[in-house]
Image (cartoon, rainbow, N blue to C red; front, side, top):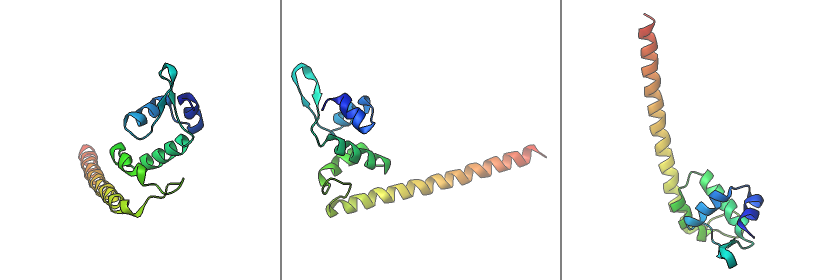
Length: 118
């Protein structure tokens, strides 16, 4: 399958597919004339990448996880559970930090509005 066909099949822009390949997440073979050719597993691989990106994982982590899938779905091997738990803890930490920043900004805004109305 050519890159344009993969793009249409997955709804992912050609530019992003090239990026995934550059990041080592997706592989292709070069045909005569240098055109990329993807195997029949490529749409499933792209779907997995999209699921992991939507979960907030960076591409370097996704690259580590790609060989750990079980079957054709998004189920991963147990050996990566600790890694996923660490990623989840990192997200929780960032959410807590953002929540504190939001509260602080709200307090500044409330104090400024209150002072400006006096």
